[in-house]
Image 1 (cartoon, rainbow, N blue to C red):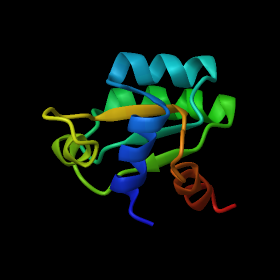
Image 2: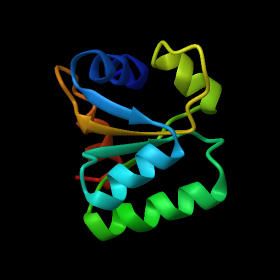
Image 3: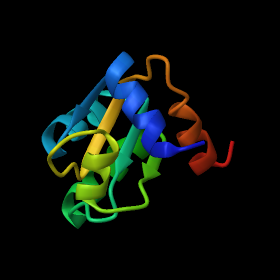
Image 4: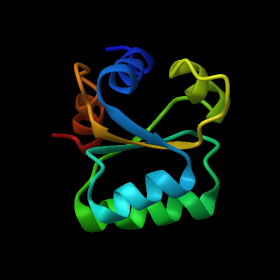
Length: 103
């Protein structure tokens, strides 16, 4: 499975939020089905996201690349350090979280 392709499909056919504040809020509220962090996500953001993800049993996926790479994978002309998938749409993106969780 190509993570970038599945993330693009979820952005196109489902609902995602991008950015530290939006992704943290979605993870904190339990809305997120999967939270994706880039390898360059700021440590304080990662710590907050991880804390809320553990509390709400939301899987995390570490995208193999920096924020610019994640943004490009999503087809965006900007850097994305963290994002939350609220609705996967037609994608199989939630399988990334299953693999990360070891399910």
